[in-house]
Structures are given as C-alpha cells and as structure tokens.
Length: 194
Image (cartoon, rainbow, N blue to C red; front, side, top):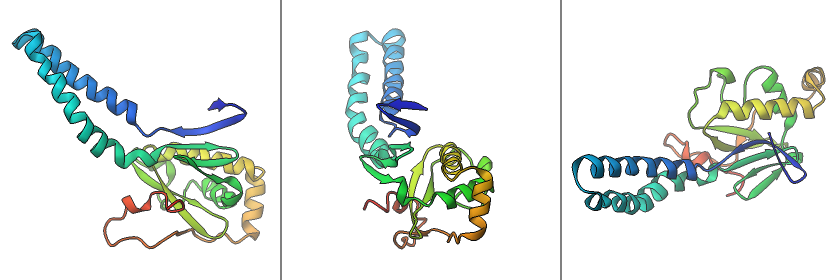
C-alpha cells in the first residue's frame, strides 16, 4: 500500500508502458551489443538501434501498449479510479463484494479466486443499482484479494457481512450493455465510462 497525499492507495496497476519500453530497449540493446562486439563494427551495428526505435512507435506503442492504456487502475478507500475517471465507493455494492469474498469467489466467475491463473481477465465491479462494469487486470487475484478484504472491513467485518447478506438481496451483477457475439473480452473494459 502506498500513500499519496491524504489518500491511502490500496491497489495500483499501471498501464505497462515503462516495463514494455524497458524490455524493448533491452532486446534491441542486446542485439546491438552482440552485433557490434562479435560480428560487425559498432558503427554498422547502430542500424539495430534505429530499427528498434522505428519499430517501437508503431508496434510497441500502437499494438502492445495502446490497447492496454485503460488498465491503469487505482483503488482507494474513497474511489476506484480507472485512468482519469473515478467511481465513488458510495456507488459500489460493497456488501455483494464482501459476501462473495468471504465465499472465496468474485464477480468474475465461479472459479475460486486462489485458483485464478495470472493472466489478463475482467473483474466485474457491482454497483448498488444491480448493474456492473468490468475492469481488466493483469493480476486479477491480487485485485480481488485487496478489494474483497477492503469490502469486508468497510461492511463491519465477517460476522456483520454474513448477517446483512442473509437479510439483503444481492442480485448477480448484470453487464452495463450487451456483449458482441465474439469472445467478448475487449468489449468488457470500462463499460461504465463509455
């Protein structure tokens, strides 16, 4: 957990721009060193640096990073911020999140959270009006753990959650809009903000 100003950040996920850029520079830098040190002269090996820069803009930024730019997420006690837009916690159905977390599940699917593979997947955030929006995470189990523990704490602890969940009706969240006929992963992003 980090602290920014007066807000405690519970979970943070970047867009992946700088790690992607570092990997790109590492690969083409290694090719440059290998070519310049073993095969040709250093001056002739500079062509690899040029190729790396020329390919980095359309491929690295356009193909790799641009589709993931909406994955910049920050969770605080007051809001869930995706990119530059925030969703106040007053609009989130924290009781539903806490109930599912105590059962070891999340709104993504019926698979228990500890069994989730570390791949990109959408986690649904339920709203108080029964709707939900999906946010894509690179490590969804880590977010679900932090968000679930926060929801249980915000609702007064495990016993209070079980007591309130027994009397309250928690509908299964429904998507904000209909999904396309394909596999649908890309259209799940940021339904609330579109």
